Image 1 (cartoon, rainbow, N blue to C red):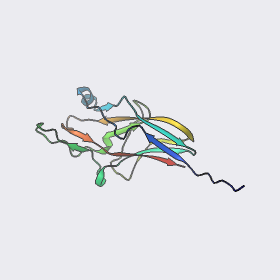
Image 2: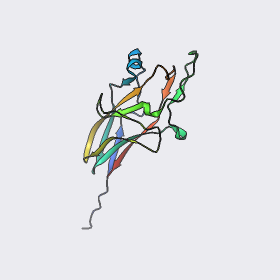
Image 3: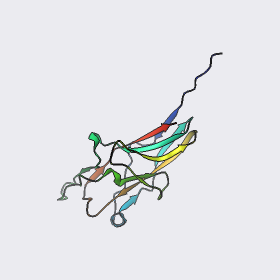
Image 4: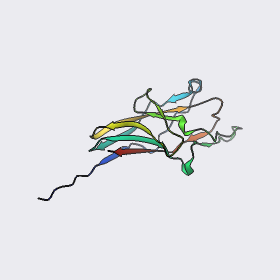
Length: 150
């Protein structure tokens, strides 16, 4: 019988391609952040140890959120809201890491995780808000998740 070469295998499944954020209330602006209570649901399967990484993936190498002005607001949406004002953690309310402004860098959401079949991984998001800099409008940031196999 010929030997069987088993490859490294990994799969990352994301429940939704569009994670909505909650608009900040006065409280969100007062404490300068909003924690999303619902996690982005991820599932990881891998036959080797792995890392889960997240990075800014805005078009054109931009390090900023896209701000679209609200008609009739009388002021333009902020064009310089840094990507780093979106943070992520696998634990609600703790351990948040800021997404780097540079697309060449990423954060390690989870590192050196063991081989696993169909592990559910929650990804909690936190957005940062400021009365001074965050004017009315619609804001979005394109990100990319990567499953890195060892």
